[in-house]
Image (cartoon, rainbow, N blue to C red; front, top):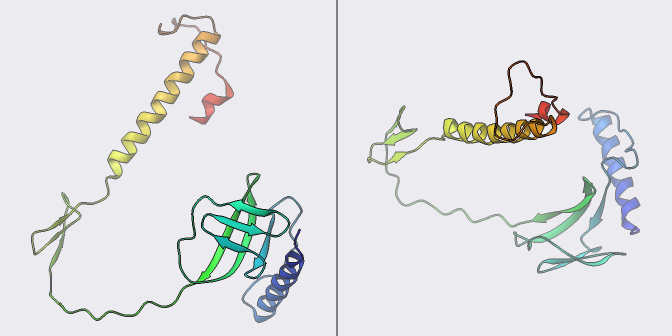
Length: 179
């Protein structure tokens, strides 16, 4: 572990107590070992080059994607989720210059049923298709349920594809409760 990790932990602890005494946060609690494992690094503790990051005591580690933002790297936090380590990088980006708009045209908007919005210029904006997404989700769950029922029939000694005889009870696995 790098020397910076305990320093940042004490810094976060101090900030938590400042927030508590200012009335903007609750009383600080200690993190239990093994839950929400994370530690922070300042910008002088690690280096980023392309799709790699150099972490003290570990060396160069490949990142999944290069850094998206161009700016001053302030800090990084390594956290563990589901036995995988993730790096969250804080980047200070400069404010973008405000571009004055030349055209201040007016447009009317009509909210409708068939289209989410219809503009007075004739352009139609389609709305989200919640029903289609729900049908796709239902189709997937139905297939999953069918596969689980076929497996239950095979375990019960029935030939696959045949209907369950009337009065026969097929033992269901605990996985059937998930669908």
